[in-house]
Image (cartoon, rainbow, N blue to C red):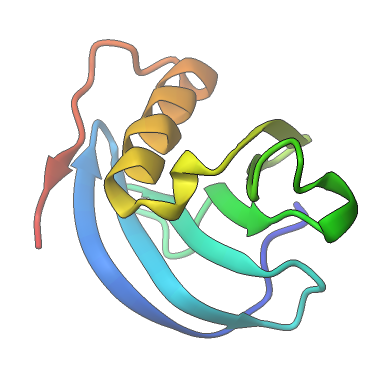
Length: 117
């Protein structure tokens, strides 16, 4: 898995999402070329490392007419851009879309993300 290489980040919120615990990160410095606005990292119960990421990454100038940020999903066997939008600058808009995408990919359509802290 091509996981984000996070050097430092500030955890903003924690969630319970089915059998996963999610952490929403902001103010991210990474060893990647990507400029992350937010990262949602999901850890399956009983495991210690995230197995699923949704990221909001700043688009390069050449693509900013599509939207300032692109949404990307990273998990085992999948590293895919989902779309572009300026709306993902907003933390709540990002979370709503990230959990919608996670529910589809992980088959958790009956689950609701519950804020833990």
